[in-house]
Length: 93
Image 1 (tube, rainbow, N blue to C red):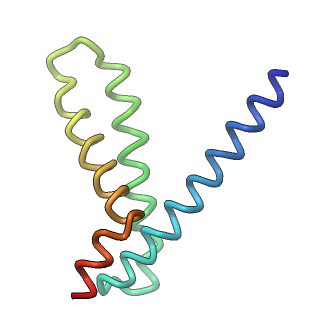
Image 2 (image 1 turned 120 degrees about the vertical axis):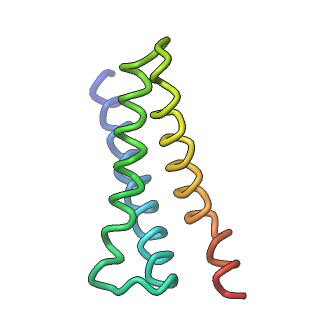
């Protein structure tokens, strides 16, 4: 049973990364970033989310936790707007 849960979690994580990566790379390319560099944009945004999440958990209950929370909110917002197509619509205007 545990193997099934782990496999399901890994499958969802890989799918989410793939969707996030392709959407954000496309957004970067449409924003004028060259194809040779557009692949880095989704890695930066998603890595900010991962690092900020770990920092929020590590600094739980401390005053210094505001900074990773700000990074996490900014990263999730950037990723969400990019995948949701909001910025794509704005860029096409």
